[in-house]
Amino acid sequence: MLLVPCPNCGPRNASDFAYGGESHVRPNPNQATPEEWRSYLYMEDNPAGWLKETWYCRSGCRRFFTVERNTATNEFREHPIPGTKLGGKA
Amino acid sequence: MANALEFESPITKRYPSGGSRDLALSDESSQTKTLVRAADDSAAASQLGVAFGGSRHQAGVHIIGQRPTEWLLVGDESAAAAMVVGLDRTGHVSVIDHTHARALLRLTGERSADVLSKICNVDFGDHMTPDGSALSASVAKVGCDITRDDASGIRSYRIACDRSFAQYLFDAILDAGREFSLTAVGA
Ligand SMILES: [Zn+2]
Image 1: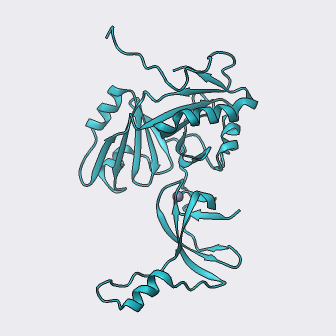
Image 2: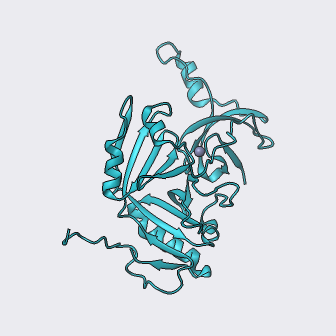
Image 3: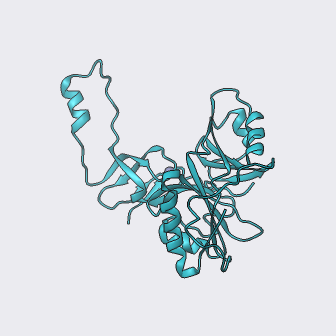
């Protein structure tokens, strides 16, 4: 099971998320050449190693977030999980 | 009012009520549910006084921080209306009545976490989800908002889902609770 660290909900089973794929900066659609646009839409780096990617927290907070994952080891790094995320009765 | 309509839950009536109530599932859908959306630094947010992941009770209303910048107010009609009227609308604040959009179930009993653990992958231990915790998760494959709201020291959860899933969810929780003698309780 892959535990994905949501910055709002904490670590959750990957089945709670939708995978958004590699995070790339979107080129300016008014200035990008067709080649640049096609590359942005369809071409992936697909490294065996660290990759910045987008996840959508479908069952939890319903927010998109970006996180770095090692595609070879499934390790996440420098993910922002707040320590007091769950709170309690005030 | 003498002729006030009594709330009759359509999802509990197929079950006989009675038996042991040490572990009980009931329908609280008649509660007024108001969804408030506001920025975290807004006056409304500080008025509501609870962050994402927590909840509190004030003036008969259960204020639930169910998602970032999103709160659900649960209470009887007059208490909920009073809180909504008193809400500071400075900035971008939206208030929507969700009473008829969402069903609200309550599961109460010392073993309620054991029941939920069978159909939901969240850790219901006290260290992760103490009393007052609010979270969203899939319960028996239904997207639900869960709030732990212990009653007199007895572990208890409020579980909200889209109303068209309510019968299925009620049946699924009862099924999961059968080994713990979970009982359906009429409204
Ligand atoms: Zn989340």
